[in-house]
Image (cartoon, rainbow, N blue to C red; front, top):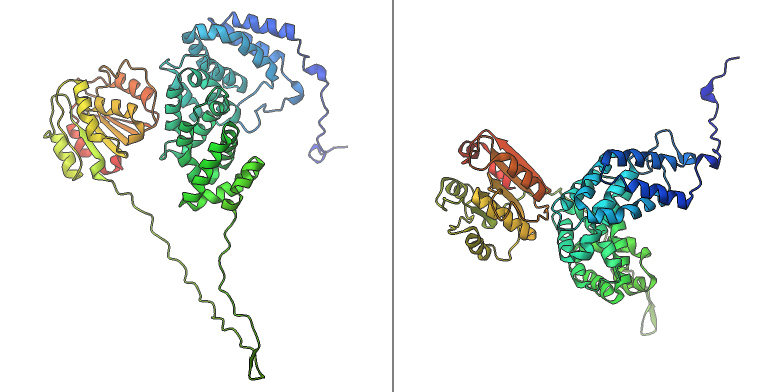
Length: 488
């Protein structure tokens, strides 16, 4: 008799617990200690790590594809206690040897498993915040990953030392994540802030409130879970300051989404906060026209029939015309061109830019780099939304200003920038997410292409690099490029 197997239900029998070794803490500690001995030998470390993770595999949870839930990462299904013991053994040696910790973190990340990437995130958190390669790793890896556990580790564990040792540098990074024009990184900024808010030793809450106020007021529905978590954390840290901030936002906002999103997430707030905000979040009922009630009118003992109220028939609403999408208009008064070392505001490129964008600023600069930066500062002042175009030495000036004042710059355009010169080349870089476009000639014999590109990749997380067939002056490329599109 032939049986059609497809018609039979699949029965999954539970595997005996013997398939998952019971955790002997003494043995686990010994295994983790031995693994740490291979810290300086990455290949041997990875070999013994795989064996150790596989030894503690929970086969009762193994699936055919063996992928972590809600993720695209493979996983060993190793119990969390195993990773905790490995981290405890690696902590001291990683802090004492940050260069080797960074190298091992790269290898663990490239392994591509959930457990190895969590260990990579842990190692980044042991590296001093002054290490110039730390932030580029965190920035790049958070853009690559979609696993929520690894993302959370990168934004919390990996930033541990920066949060504690250089809080100002950490808050500068968070400001970059929460830049008003980069909504796609807002979730990262919120998640990075949560451990600092929860830290009872951190008492300076006002700067954090200033940073998050525009995001709470914007209140995008896609971030409502993150916003709820943020508000609850802030309330636990300081109920009075948080209540005052939320009331101020709700009383002054012109954004209808603020109230809508806050109403959706309010059920997750502590009850006292819900009570404080209840009136501000209550839906406003549209006022209906008052109807005149029927009443009898008595005149000289005669009863007159009640007067019927006159109700106007509803006016049929005309369908609203669709509004054409608003075309972006560039503010030429916020475009500035920074000329090169031996050039002036009357150079060919400066004149061509001024013709294309009337009203833009093309100042003259003289003296050393420090003197030119002092001349630039009062021109830009504290205004925001600058579009900075810098050529060669002017590119060095524009890049330096953008790294120091990222919130003032909406876009940075660099033409063969001399980033290899001091003080840029040797500074401890904190990468910024200002949209940056670099145009560099493949035949440039003044500013070498590859060293500049490497520095730019470490400095700007939203970088577009155009390599053109041209020399240092970019005369041919200037005529061919669409500058309206580049600046917009």
